[in-house]
Length: 142
Image (cartoon, rainbow, N blue to C red; front, side, top):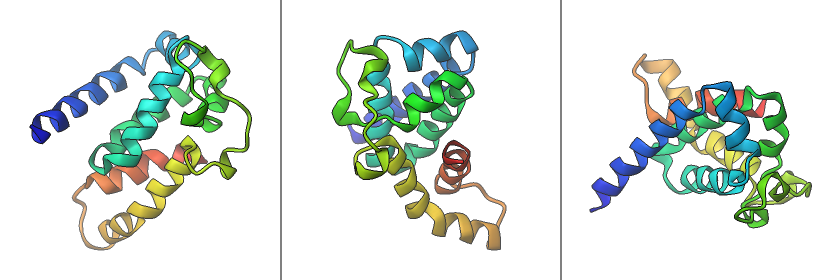
């Protein structure tokens, strides 16, 4: 059952990544009425499913190409998200002071996966999910 859920989650994230590419979709996904639900789901999956963190980071990176999306993404805190509250869920509390913020989740991903990334650079050209998570997370934080 866990493998089926894992594969369903992976497929859902791949679909979200494809949907996050067109510019028209970015605004709806990050600034629309259910943006809090989407950002919350990406934050939770990134924090709890390390094997899918790179897909979450890739989706966030795609969404961040919309200039108006950068601030809501970087200021997002799941505990502030309310269904149907649209972009108002991005209350401007310092995301650095909130352990559950998306920014802190990105930071934890980078810190946790850095040893895999550094090891990959030294030994092999084979890609790992940990290395890919770093690769997609770094530009969002920059």
